[in-house]
Image (cartoon, rainbow over all chains, first blue to last red):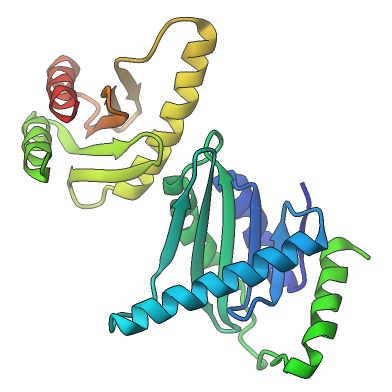
Length: 156
Length: 117
């Protein structure tokens, strides 16, 4: 399974997380759905769909929390018959990173993913570059940025 | 069932001398259902890893044709982890000192497993 990163500093923490938690698919992205790293995806179109859906779910749950006068939820777990999905956010010096994790229930569990997500969060916070302002992606540049990211992630 | 019987069952386990904590863990999820732990024991970590171990151990025992597990005793240099899987998929877990009375803890774990079903 391939693990690739657009932002190189995310790669080592992501690889460790995948190995420890036994995750099948992982996306690290911005809350807007801009992909920073991925593990396990073989097609760019799947990454684009997963990033868009993950970002939308995070936005929806953040709004629910806001309407309840609560801080945003720390994590979201959705468990099916054979797979589970976990979504969590990590504040770093480069902005918030959203992690979307898909795991097989016969290889991992919600508890394991949540446990090692805490470690991933700590490692991402420590590894994130402290200097420099993260580049804002404008709507006009979004498609080009997306295309560049996918080229990096899939080695095209 | 309310949480009160769970609390009572865990309380009986932790009354045994040398028991540092007791937990009910969902084996499938590796999540804590109830816990009664001394400070310093990482409940969510123990739960996640015990759940993972239960899953793999169950498959190993099935492959070996020796039925389902009824009691595990993992002895470490500084303590032990004792586990009784209940029929409902809950693991009753005790974290103990190395020199605990294992037989007594096992009896309490089996009693708690009966309570949680």
